[in-house]
Length: 497
Image (cartoon, rainbow, N blue to C red; front, side):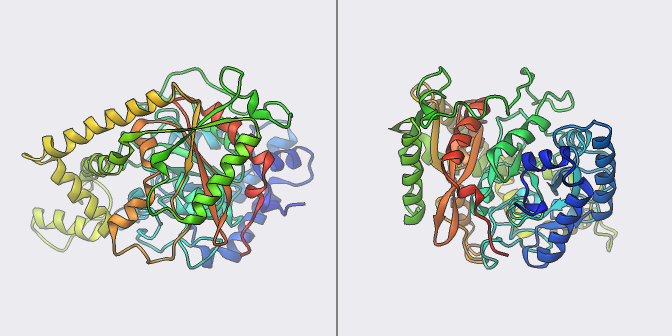
């Protein structure tokens, strides 16, 4: 039987309901695990142990009274880009090192309403800008599978904490792959929902037309449970969708036949999976390619029909993203001027020098790089040549997906073209680092849902498979992922740390 901190959400639910374990015991187990491994993993910026035990005690009293939601009493880590009332929220930046919000993000409100237990705030790349969690102003996070390697980014703390057993689940944010890519590199499940499905209120902005909050969990069932808790219309977020609330756990198991995907398609027939040629890029590691080929065979064995498809505008996605996202970043981060809030350089009487020094000392090099890229793209004389053209490319990328989803129900791709790489290997070459997100960026550009699940190992390190669907196809992706996990055991493999 799994030790308490290694229980999934649904396993913990059952044991809490049967009084086989208390929330206080489960929370203490997670906190003890944090004490054991955190000095090596570095997944947390802030640990809120006293608050967690207090919340766990309240959860136990609700259980005794027959009350509480599906996440009642279950410990979670929150990425340090989401506002938590009375708890430091830094974005892993010196600029916000001492910022303590006076309100909770909507997703935090929703979790606390269900009785979640907050273990603390997760480490990340500064302002969610990075693919390795090496851009944190405080310290890099390490991959529990190999402590000399990165966990991915920017939600590296979220993925590492779940993989290491420090948290039962976590919330991350995904702007260009920042939930799915670290989930892949750490061997856990990560989902980027349809744009607007989860409220961004209280999420400190990087690129507002891309940002989306998503769950990091141990298996697909847990992912559906968390998605149930955090979705829903929020009038405080102008981009929040108003569609009818969905129960993502309903029907996730489909039938129990040996070929479940022969009946799980959206129209009740075979699930049609497309494998896009453009996602099997030059430079993909051979082990990743072989692992994905084996996963495709498994899907066919489960009854899915698989066909090759093409998304030709994929080759523009990287350039498109790294013009639009930095442009939005340039606008969003202009508010950090040393006047209103955050770090402020005081050792001068000159206003302009104070602002320059504030941003010089408050922002790290990657954030400065993206601000400069975006400011350049938006500047007079270059707006039409870069920003406007990138927006036109974005339209073409969306149209490509619309066309291909008339042929197939979902796409199967690698999440990352490589496994976790050594710390420091790519920090000197930003372009090489950006290329790591080549398989995840198009999903954010088009506002689609994407699910990453473990599908094997290469060089002894986890490989992730990405499932992409049309807007609001989360139920189908979760059923597809669940069927795959029932047929394999990759998600049950744990790092030895």
